Image 1 (cartoon, rainbow, N blue to C red):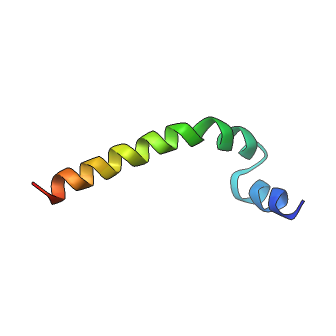
Image 2 (image 1 turned 180 degrees about the horizontal axis):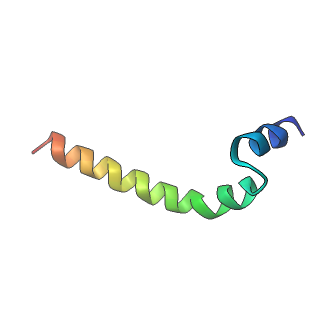
Length: 43
C-alpha cells in the first residue's frame, strides 16, 4: 500500500521490525526526556 511504500523509503525494508520493537523503548525514552526537562525547568 501507499503508506507501506512511504515507510519503506523512510526507514528501509525493516521498518516493521523497527516500528514494533522500538515503540515501547521510544516511549520510555520520551518519558525520561520529559522528566529531565521538567526537573530542569522546575528546579
